Image 1 (cartoon, rainbow, N blue to C red):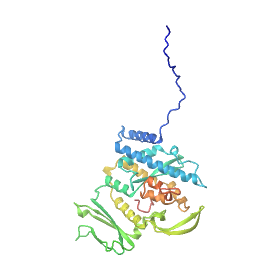
Image 2 (cartoon, helix red, strand yellow):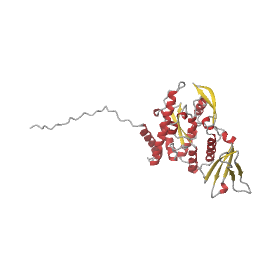
Image 3 (spheres, rainbow, N blue to C red):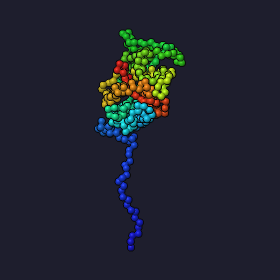
Image 4 (cartoon, rainbow, N blue to C red):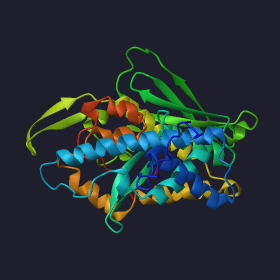
Length: 346
């Protein structure tokens, strides 16, 4: 008797099914892990470092989206190269991310570090430049510094405050100061500031540095935004200046940040602590002084295109998410700064 059992016919294998493409975040992580393995000989990213790498992906992705949106909106001089992941120098980005993650710099934290895309006309790719915030400078100095102070004090001095510097001398082995805020609610105008390196067990090593307001403003970038430093802001319409307005900005905070950067930039790096991550960070800093970057700034500095976003990133005041949520701070093309050769680089 014939077997009446129903059988399911075997379907022929469909060899035309397209493979599932990995997401950009997965490919980014794999690239970072690959670069990390090449550098250390084995894959050894800790859980914390993996989370930092994810934060870098989120931050860079946000900056790429913002930059591409601005590029697409340009009515003239629009660069034909789209600012997307497909056009990013992933190898260079991965190396930079590894170095920053192992140092502990976190783009999700305010004032640590920020990233910006910058076109490399030699490779026809976008390099991602990294810009340290003032907290990032502190972290680097603390980790790599030689004889790091027990405390770093940074203060602005106003016209109604009382301040007296007590310098080291033969009769006075400890450098110090006297500082009194007479009226905390009406301190007058900024006339300068100071930072103080204090050593609890070796007070004779204490160091006081005083700066006048003129000294502080010497360190003010030439491209500084009025949105941050205050002053006269041009009003642009259809690519032309149609007037100006005075805005307060955040002058006091920017002066204090300038002192803060100087205070931690004044800590000597210990050559015995220098590692590959620190050297990579120095290479990233050197990239900011590239002549092409300088030319980009010069080209756009007075065009109305370079606005508050660049300085927000430079000073680490906002995370990428906050920049994205503030449309007024994300208009125009971002350009990284050039540390002037004749000015302190901090």
